[in-house]
Length: 197
Image (cartoon, rainbow, N blue to C red; front, side, top):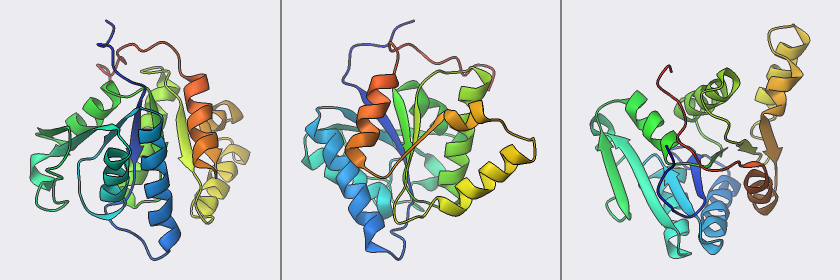
């Protein structure tokens, strides 16, 4: 079932904190700005704090349509962003991730904590299992992801992952290079099959 015609839609996973290095905030703003300047749509976790708020505000300022998806229980914890084109309040974290995926053509992870890790790995697992075929990227900022990537390569070396799984994850340090790569590898928009997830 095709989705209704909308601009290219990018889901961004990122922290509800800023982190200690100002480069993380700068990267979130740069990503949001680039999405807006391309006339694309941003889908994200619906908060107005941390990197979440930065990417959303930058995208809106640059002209993007911004969709936030947040569980009701986290409205107070993450301080739901009221100045979006569409703030969707859902019941559960699982519903949040599923709805974000259904509205996105590609996925990018910025630096973040355990919530970002969980979103990244679940979306990556969905891709591996064939629930969707949408591209997934990791925006490297100041070497933040380097220890995790080293561990993942160790997992390949130990025989628990393989190179084809690693190849599903696009790694870039440049915002524009990342967006160009994800758009180029995105197929025709269709509803992802997450019914078995």
